[in-house]
Length: 264
Image 1: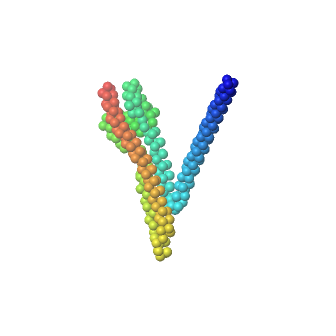
Image 2 (image 1 turned 60 degrees about the horizontal axis):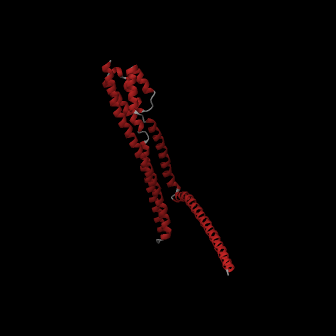
Image 3 (image 1 turned 90 degrees about the vertical axis):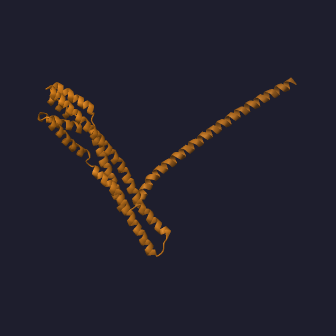
Protein backbone atom coordinates (compact mmCIF):
# COMPACT_ATOMS: atom_id res chain seq x y z
CA UNK A 1 0.00 0.00 0.00
CA UNK A 2 2.83 2.38 0.83
CA UNK A 3 4.43 1.62 -2.51
CA UNK A 4 1.14 2.38 -4.22
CA UNK A 5 0.91 5.78 -2.50
CA UNK A 6 4.54 6.44 -3.37
CA UNK A 7 3.92 5.61 -7.05
CA UNK A 8 0.84 7.78 -7.07
CA UNK A 9 2.75 10.67 -5.48
CA UNK A 10 5.61 10.34 -7.98
CA UNK A 11 3.13 10.15 -10.85
CA UNK A 12 1.32 13.23 -9.58
CA UNK A 13 4.55 15.22 -9.25
CA UNK A 14 5.62 14.23 -12.75
CA UNK A 15 2.21 15.14 -14.14
CA UNK A 16 2.24 18.49 -12.33
CA UNK A 17 5.78 19.25 -13.56
CA UNK A 18 4.88 18.30 -17.11
CA UNK A 19 1.76 20.44 -16.95
CA UNK A 20 3.74 23.39 -15.59
CA UNK A 21 6.38 23.03 -18.30
CA UNK A 22 3.71 22.82 -20.98
CA UNK A 23 1.97 25.87 -19.55
CA UNK A 24 5.23 27.83 -19.58
CA UNK A 25 5.91 26.76 -23.15
CA UNK A 26 2.40 27.79 -24.19
CA UNK A 27 2.81 31.18 -22.47
CA UNK A 28 6.18 31.73 -24.18
CA UNK A 29 4.70 30.75 -27.53
CA UNK A 30 1.74 33.08 -26.99
CA UNK A 31 4.08 35.93 -25.99
CA UNK A 32 6.24 35.32 -29.05
CA UNK A 33 3.17 35.25 -31.27
CA UNK A 34 1.86 38.45 -29.68
CA UNK A 35 5.23 40.13 -30.16
CA UNK A 36 5.37 38.98 -33.76
CA UNK A 37 1.83 40.24 -34.31
CA UNK A 38 2.75 43.60 -32.74
CA UNK A 39 5.82 43.88 -34.93
CA UNK A 40 3.73 43.00 -37.98
CA UNK A 41 1.12 45.62 -37.05
CA UNK A 42 3.84 48.22 -36.41
CA UNK A 43 5.53 47.46 -39.71
CA UNK A 44 2.14 47.60 -41.46
CA UNK A 45 1.41 50.95 -39.81
CA UNK A 46 4.83 52.28 -40.80
CA UNK A 47 4.31 51.08 -44.35
CA UNK A 48 0.84 52.64 -44.40
CA UNK A 49 2.23 55.92 -43.05
CA UNK A 50 5.00 55.88 -45.65
CA UNK A 51 2.49 55.11 -48.38
CA UNK A 52 0.27 57.90 -47.12
CA UNK A 53 3.21 60.31 -47.04
CA UNK A 54 4.21 59.42 -50.58
CA UNK A 55 0.56 59.60 -51.54
CA UNK A 56 0.28 63.17 -50.23
CA UNK A 57 3.13 64.38 -52.45
CA UNK A 58 1.64 62.53 -55.37
CA UNK A 59 -1.79 63.96 -54.67
CA UNK A 60 -0.38 67.49 -54.58
CA UNK A 61 1.21 66.94 -57.98
CA UNK A 62 -2.03 65.52 -59.34
CA UNK A 63 -4.06 68.43 -57.99
CA UNK A 64 -1.50 70.87 -59.39
CA UNK A 65 -1.89 69.36 -62.87
CA UNK A 66 -5.67 69.15 -62.52
CA UNK A 67 -5.82 72.85 -61.67
CA UNK A 68 -4.33 73.70 -65.03
CA UNK A 69 -0.63 74.43 -65.53
CA UNK A 70 -1.24 77.83 -67.23
CA UNK A 71 -2.98 79.03 -64.05
CA UNK A 72 -1.12 77.09 -61.38
CA UNK A 73 2.39 77.90 -62.64
CA UNK A 74 2.11 81.69 -62.06
CA UNK A 75 0.85 81.02 -58.51
CA UNK A 76 3.81 78.71 -57.89
CA UNK A 77 6.22 81.34 -59.25
CA UNK A 78 4.71 83.96 -56.92
CA UNK A 79 5.31 81.64 -53.97
CA UNK A 80 8.88 80.72 -54.98
CA UNK A 81 10.01 84.28 -55.75
CA UNK A 82 8.29 85.60 -52.62
CA UNK A 83 10.01 82.99 -50.42
CA UNK A 84 13.37 83.82 -52.03
CA UNK A 85 12.93 87.48 -51.11
CA UNK A 86 11.82 86.48 -47.61
CA UNK A 87 14.94 84.37 -47.04
CA UNK A 88 17.20 87.17 -48.29
CA UNK A 89 15.49 89.71 -46.01
CA UNK A 90 15.67 87.43 -42.97
CA UNK A 91 19.42 86.96 -43.48
CA UNK A 92 19.93 90.71 -43.99
CA UNK A 93 17.92 91.68 -40.91
CA UNK A 94 19.64 89.11 -38.71
CA UNK A 95 23.00 90.51 -39.82
CA UNK A 96 21.69 94.03 -39.13
CA UNK A 97 20.90 93.25 -35.50
CA UNK A 98 23.45 94.88 -33.18
CA UNK A 99 24.05 94.88 -29.45
CA UNK A 100 23.57 98.64 -29.09
CA UNK A 101 24.37 98.75 -25.36
CA UNK A 102 27.76 97.19 -25.94
CA UNK A 103 28.37 99.43 -28.98
CA UNK A 104 27.52 102.59 -27.03
CA UNK A 105 29.80 101.52 -24.20
CA UNK A 106 32.65 100.90 -26.66
CA UNK A 107 32.09 104.29 -28.30
CA UNK A 108 32.09 106.07 -24.95
CA UNK A 109 35.30 104.31 -23.91
CA UNK A 110 36.91 105.12 -27.25
CA UNK A 111 35.93 108.79 -26.95
CA UNK A 112 37.44 109.03 -23.49
CA UNK A 113 40.60 107.17 -24.45
CA UNK A 114 41.32 108.14 -28.04
CA UNK A 115 38.89 110.86 -29.06
CA UNK A 116 36.49 111.04 -31.98
CA UNK A 117 38.71 109.15 -34.44
CA UNK A 118 38.90 106.18 -32.08
CA UNK A 119 35.10 106.21 -31.73
CA UNK A 120 34.72 106.33 -35.53
CA UNK A 121 37.06 103.37 -35.82
CA UNK A 122 34.81 101.41 -33.46
CA UNK A 123 31.83 102.19 -35.69
CA UNK A 124 33.72 101.15 -38.82
CA UNK A 125 34.59 97.79 -37.27
CA UNK A 126 30.99 97.08 -36.18
CA UNK A 127 28.46 95.54 -38.53
CA UNK A 128 24.91 96.82 -38.92
CA UNK A 129 22.94 99.98 -39.71
CA UNK A 130 23.19 101.34 -36.15
CA UNK A 131 26.97 101.52 -36.35
CA UNK A 132 26.72 103.20 -39.77
CA UNK A 133 24.38 105.84 -38.36
CA UNK A 134 26.70 106.47 -35.43
CA UNK A 135 29.62 106.87 -37.81
CA UNK A 136 27.76 109.48 -39.84
CA UNK A 137 26.98 111.42 -36.68
CA UNK A 138 30.56 111.27 -35.32
CA UNK A 139 31.92 112.25 -38.72
CA UNK A 140 30.21 115.65 -38.26
CA UNK A 141 31.36 116.14 -34.70
CA UNK A 142 33.10 119.42 -35.45
CA UNK A 143 29.89 120.95 -36.88
CA UNK A 144 27.98 120.84 -33.61
CA UNK A 145 25.37 118.74 -31.87
CA UNK A 146 22.48 120.03 -34.01
CA UNK A 147 24.20 118.91 -37.20
CA UNK A 148 25.02 115.56 -35.63
CA UNK A 149 21.35 115.07 -34.73
CA UNK A 150 20.16 115.97 -38.23
CA UNK A 151 22.74 113.66 -39.77
CA UNK A 152 21.67 110.76 -37.55
CA UNK A 153 17.99 111.30 -38.38
CA UNK A 154 18.61 111.61 -42.14
CA UNK A 155 20.88 108.62 -42.40
CA UNK A 156 18.50 106.63 -40.18
CA UNK A 157 15.79 107.14 -42.79
CA UNK A 158 18.16 105.83 -45.46
CA UNK A 159 18.95 102.73 -43.42
CA UNK A 160 15.27 102.14 -42.74
CA UNK A 161 14.59 102.25 -46.48
CA UNK A 162 17.29 99.64 -47.07
CA UNK A 163 15.76 97.36 -44.45
CA UNK A 164 12.32 97.65 -46.05
CA UNK A 165 13.73 96.84 -49.47
CA UNK A 166 11.83 93.97 -51.08
CA UNK A 167 8.77 94.16 -48.84
CA UNK A 168 6.73 95.78 -51.62
CA UNK A 169 7.38 92.76 -53.85
CA UNK A 170 6.27 90.38 -51.09
CA UNK A 171 3.06 92.37 -50.58
CA UNK A 172 2.52 92.29 -54.37
CA UNK A 173 2.78 88.49 -54.45
CA UNK A 174 0.45 88.24 -51.43
CA UNK A 175 -2.22 90.12 -53.39
CA UNK A 176 -1.40 88.58 -56.78
CA UNK A 177 -1.49 84.87 -55.84
CA UNK A 178 -5.17 84.72 -54.75
CA UNK A 179 -6.16 87.03 -57.61
CA UNK A 180 -4.63 84.59 -60.10
CA UNK A 181 -6.42 81.78 -58.30
CA UNK A 182 -9.77 83.56 -58.52
CA UNK A 183 -9.17 84.29 -62.19
CA UNK A 184 -8.51 80.63 -62.88
CA UNK A 185 -11.67 79.71 -60.99
CA UNK A 186 -13.78 82.16 -62.97
CA UNK A 187 -12.39 80.88 -66.26
CA UNK A 188 -13.04 77.30 -65.16
CA UNK A 189 -16.63 78.15 -64.22
CA UNK A 190 -17.16 79.76 -67.62
CA UNK A 191 -15.89 76.57 -69.27
CA UNK A 192 -18.21 74.47 -67.10
CA UNK A 193 -21.22 76.53 -68.17
CA UNK A 194 -20.09 76.26 -71.78
CA UNK A 195 -20.25 72.46 -71.36
CA UNK A 196 -23.76 72.76 -69.95
CA UNK A 197 -24.79 74.90 -72.91
CA UNK A 198 -23.21 72.48 -75.39
CA UNK A 199 -24.93 69.44 -73.83
CA UNK A 200 -28.27 71.22 -73.56
CA UNK A 201 -28.84 69.59 -70.19
CA UNK A 202 -27.30 69.79 -66.72
CA UNK A 203 -25.25 66.69 -66.00
CA UNK A 204 -23.74 66.76 -62.48
CA UNK A 205 -21.06 64.25 -63.47
CA UNK A 206 -19.86 66.30 -66.42
CA UNK A 207 -19.99 69.67 -64.65
CA UNK A 208 -18.65 68.67 -61.21
CA UNK A 209 -15.20 67.79 -62.57
CA UNK A 210 -14.81 71.17 -64.25
CA UNK A 211 -15.97 73.06 -61.15
CA UNK A 212 -13.57 71.06 -58.90
CA UNK A 213 -10.65 71.82 -61.19
CA UNK A 214 -11.62 75.50 -61.25
CA UNK A 215 -11.67 75.72 -57.45
CA UNK A 216 -8.18 74.19 -57.14
CA UNK A 217 -6.57 77.37 -58.45
CA UNK A 218 -8.27 79.37 -55.68
CA UNK A 219 -7.06 76.94 -53.03
CA UNK A 220 -3.44 77.07 -54.19
CA UNK A 221 -3.57 80.85 -54.52
CA UNK A 222 -4.87 81.25 -50.97
CA UNK A 223 -2.24 78.84 -49.59
CA UNK A 224 0.56 80.82 -51.27
CA UNK A 225 -0.84 84.11 -49.95
CA UNK A 226 -1.16 82.78 -46.37
CA UNK A 227 2.44 81.52 -46.33
CA UNK A 228 3.84 84.80 -47.64
CA UNK A 229 1.63 86.85 -45.30
CA UNK A 230 3.04 85.09 -42.23
CA UNK A 231 6.62 85.82 -43.29
CA UNK A 232 5.71 89.41 -44.26
CA UNK A 233 4.37 90.14 -40.78
CA UNK A 234 7.48 88.61 -39.24
CA UNK A 235 9.74 90.86 -41.35
CA UNK A 236 7.71 93.96 -40.50
CA UNK A 237 7.92 93.23 -36.78
CA UNK A 238 11.66 92.57 -37.09
CA UNK A 239 12.19 95.91 -38.86
CA UNK A 240 10.10 97.75 -36.27
CA UNK A 241 12.24 96.31 -33.50
CA UNK A 242 15.48 97.36 -35.20
CA UNK A 243 14.15 100.86 -35.90
CA UNK A 244 13.01 101.36 -32.30
CA UNK A 245 16.39 100.19 -31.08
CA UNK A 246 18.06 102.53 -33.56
CA UNK A 247 16.10 105.57 -32.38
CA UNK A 248 16.70 104.83 -28.71
CA UNK A 249 20.42 104.31 -29.18
CA UNK A 250 20.72 107.49 -31.28
CA UNK A 251 19.44 109.53 -28.33
CA UNK A 252 22.01 107.84 -26.10
CA UNK A 253 24.75 108.66 -28.62
CA UNK A 254 23.84 112.35 -28.56
CA UNK A 255 24.02 112.31 -24.76
CA UNK A 256 27.50 110.75 -24.92
CA UNK A 257 28.67 113.34 -27.45
CA UNK A 258 27.31 116.22 -25.37
CA UNK A 259 29.10 114.95 -22.24
CA UNK A 260 32.31 114.58 -24.22
CA UNK A 261 32.02 118.14 -25.55
CA UNK A 262 31.51 119.50 -22.05
CA UNK A 263 34.70 117.78 -20.91
CA UNK A 264 36.68 119.21 -23.83
